[in-house]
Length: 133
Image (cartoon, rainbow, N blue to C red; front, top):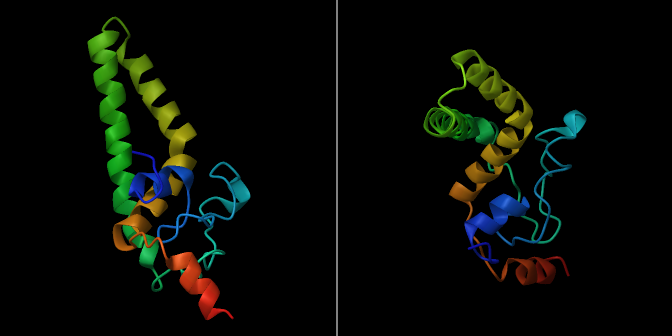
């Protein structure tokens, strides 16, 4: 499932969608000064990450879907497994989880969006090395 060549590998390791070797983000999601900043090109295969200006605006839809999934998961879990917890506590926990996880959701939405449009190519590194000679 998380083997090289799968989209899940690229998403959860924050790696280049094409070669799955190069780093996608400049820093980790919780480095707030560089949150969401991506490299211009992959250091391993040379892929330009931003296909066009505004390419990652579509990642907002992915972030929205992740946020809804988080809300539904927490709300359902409270109501199924902890029914004695008051609604006020539930709302507080959901809001706190959303705030704490928002940098991670932002990073995940960008890498998922890139993986929707860029496919894995096991020969990408070799082709890039041959081109740069």
